[in-house]
Amino acid sequence: MIQSMEKGAAYIGGKWVRPPGTRLYEVVNPATGERLAEVIHCGPSEVDAAVEAAHSAFQESGWRTLDPSKRERILRKIGDLIESNAKELARIESLQNGKTVREALRGDIPPAWDIFHYYAGWITKYYGHTVPVSGPYLAETRIEPIGVVGAIVPWNFPLLLASWKLAPALAMGNTVVLKPAEQTPLTALYLAELLEEAGIPPGVVNIIPGFGDTGALLARHMKVRKITFTGSREVAREILRASADSNLKRVSLELGGKSPNIVFSDADLDRVSDVAFGEIFGHKGEVCSASSRLLAESSISGELIRRLKDKAERMVLGDPQHPKTQMGSLISRTQLERVERYVSSGLKEGAALVCGGKRHLDNGCDRGFFFRPTIFARVKPHMKIAQEEIFGPVLSVMDFDSEETLIETANSTVYGLVSMIWTRDIGRAFRIARRLESGTVWINAAGPFDSAMPFGGVKESGWGREMGMEALKEYTQVKSIWIGLEY
Ligand code: ADP
Image 1 (spheres, rainbow, N blue to C red):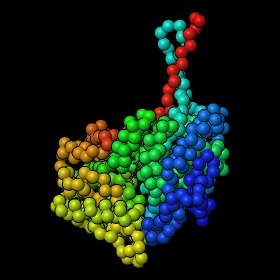
Image 2 (image 1 turned 90 degrees about the vertical axis):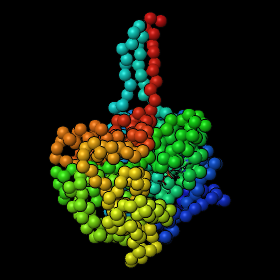
Image 3 (image 1 turned 120 degrees about the vertical axis):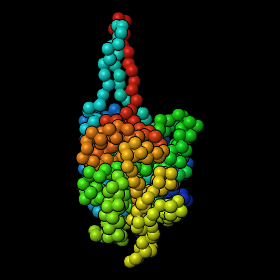
Image 4 (image 1 turned 180 degrees about the vertical axis):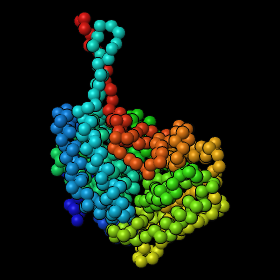
């Protein structure tokens, strides 16, 4: 058991903080119900202390004025340390989230170390310009950090989503207060130890476990200059209100999706069925970019559904720590009940249940929140299971016959995060890609991500971008400096 898990403390100003008498709560393994740790639930005094520590560190620690090459070295080292601790981090991610260790080792930890390496490289390469203005002036733009950044993250990719925010924020010289999700604070606390080892000065990163009220205090704080948030649309609205009611802090939002996977009859069905399956049932479907709607050309939808059903029925659910397990436990009873409500709604609205639709209770799984991979066919665009983000292993299959109805259906939700298109007709693929309301379009590609490629949504999937050069703008502001040459 690592130190930070035993402590269950907040990490503020380079110290572990858990004063006697503070509120504590239990972090539980959702697959078994076992207690993993007892962790502080930060309230007003801890949030305030964390923001003050970040504020002083921004003013005084020398982080933002540190030689860029030295900051680069520290970020690089953070990436290296995540890499060398990968196995332990994946194990803890699996314990607290219920996903399999295999998934965490592939999908969570490598991109987390990569993002620190990637932004380490940007530190010496992102700078302002000398601008050709009219008149006798030397005019320069300077790229500056914003100040204290509040990062609020959800429970589905706890370390990775924290890293997507921390790496660019730190690279650009900001200081950070990170609020992990209440269900999954343990890898964030582990990260604090790695940050310290890498040489991050005290106060530059502060970590405050807690619930929604903890996040709300951060969002309202007058000394926080920016909130970067991943989570639900409901909480995003709260955060925007908090910004409006406090200091008009900047906000960037990543809010999930109802992403279409579009398959034409000329696609390679072997490949597509593998990808379509992984895209909705990987990580239990608790993925913001999950392809939860399969839009299949009518002539192949029957065949595609047969293949997916076959895979779903053979899928191995069970102990997330076991190497043969393919799907672990949903994060919580709340999430399980949410998925069950959507299944009932699909049935009530007339969709055809192809497989799943119920809990998996064999071999001790009744202690957790395991749910069979579920496929609905004959789903219509107006149904709830076609419109709302379920955030669980439920696939809605819809048929299409023409490009026009396909695009109308694909764009018919409030979301616009990612889309997939499978066809050999590249002209058609591009034609459709241009008309999709979506932050990312993958054409004949199995949902690739890369630290260099921006990721984020349109419509109610959010504002702003994570990763790539784009994210640097989220953590900087531009100062224009004019110098009179004839003074
Ligand atoms: P999910 O539905 O995935 O749990 P939420 O949007 O509810 O997503 O939560 C995402 C993160 O936002 C979590 O860290 C949670 O504690 C935090 N949070 C919840 N309510 C608020 C709030 N009112 N203000 C700020 N953060 C909040």
